[in-house]
Image 1 (cartoon, rainbow, N blue to C red):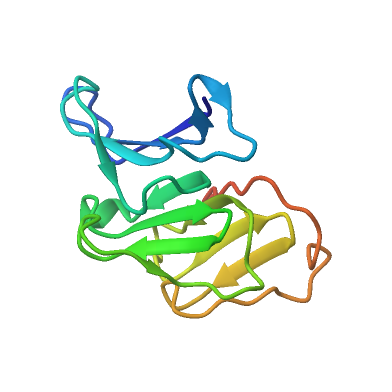
Image 2 (tube, rainbow, N blue to C red):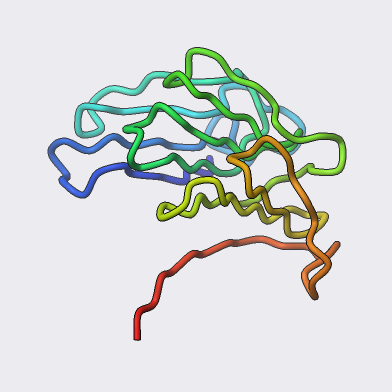
Amino acid sequence: RRVLFRSLNKSVRSQVVFAVVHGNQNKISVGSTLGSGLFLSKDSLKTWVHLGPENIKAFCVDAIDSCNGKVIFLGAGDGIHRTLDYGANWKTVTDWRVKEVLDIKIDQFNSNYIYAATAFGFWLSTDGGETWSNPNTPMKNKYSYKVIIRKYTS
């Protein structure tokens, strides 16, 4: 089972934790996605609920911190899924070019900027996930695995 966490708050006692599960019966999933997807805990990891598409080949998750879990992006084998209502409804916001999304990061200082690392290149949205481009950079069409955003001040 592959589990990746994304916490919205700094306080351990009151944090919201998202876990992306990409596995089946405690083994790494190759063909089956049974029991996989996005899970949420709001009570210090005591209970979990499933959010979003069920049995999806999910790899990563990020949320807009200032929205307290209302806006969530889920990276999966079939593209990027977005919810604007705490996970009640989901929409795939990418087309056939954006597949095998291995990592996704939202710029928390400007949430219109969303970055995605995929098996088919580095992708960028500058409008909150409505449209996506594969910028003409050295990362164009290169297998990308991880995105990290850091703000540095001088």
